[in-house]
Amino acid sequence: MRIVVLTGAGISAESGVPTFRDADGLWEGHRVEDVATPEAFAWQPELVHAFYDLRRAALATVEPNPAHRALARLEEHLGDDLTLVTQNIDDLHERAGSRDVVHMHGELRSALCTTCGARSPHTASLADEPPCPGCATPTLRPDVVWFGEVPYELGRIERALETADRFVSIGTSGAVYPAAGFVQVARAAGARTLELNLEPSEGTDFFHEARHGRAGELVPAWVDQVLEDTLAGR
Ligand code: APR
Picture 1 (cartoon, rainbow, N blue to C red):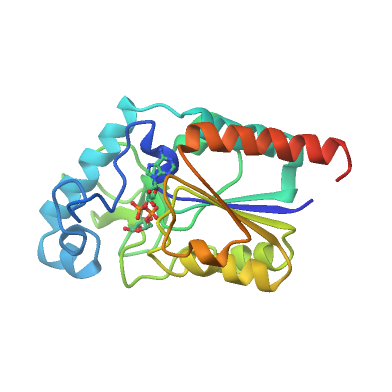
Picture 2 (cartoon, helix red, strand yellow):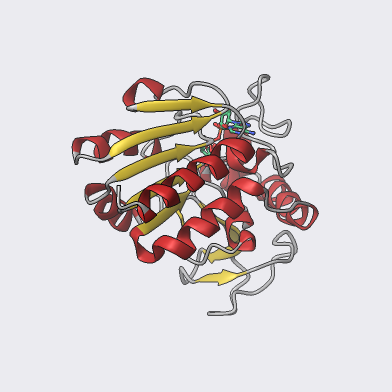
């Protein structure tokens, strides 16, 4: 049983991490294009650094929830047969115990050097322009994939989607590509597809099945069901 799980901001909502697309269309009070584009960083690096510095610091105030922990439990049983892809830049999957997480949109606790291209673990502020641990140049930016940039590890993700028996999308609005198109790739390759989200996503009709409710309830129940099926050889 090979499973690909895609998670989005909704899985971390019950931990207290704000989602992107709130009712007012703002992301923590900012228009997304003011903080999450290379152009924004070129024009207003102080604002962009301050925004991501705050989000990085806020990680210390949140904890993984039962949905993150259930996916860590699934990895314990399935090992490499589970590919966990997240659009989230928080570290809640890892803190719940997941060991192999594909962060396709980068990570808050990582910095990217615009001079040498090195990615390095980073937990402090970037606003005060620390030197890159690789080349010593003070040109670190958040290691986050902004609008207009290419997500990480698309080759690995595509290979996993093409050999998956099941594809499950959790807590994502289905508004941002390429992640929003993974369901169609997996389905075309023969996978059974399932959406677990608070409400129907933009792509809900692409899935064989959709269950709507809170991730903290839906995900542990789904993992229990998968593990029962696996034990019973179904
Ligand atoms: N349980 C399950 N789903 C939830 C919960 C919850 N407790 N709370 C909210 N949701 C759902 C919302 O209904 C919404 O459909 O999670 C989804 C979150 O959608 P977005 O805020 O759009 O987040 P996401 O899909 O991860 O955004 C994708 O957009 O801005 C970019 O790079 C950023 O990775 C991000 C990408």
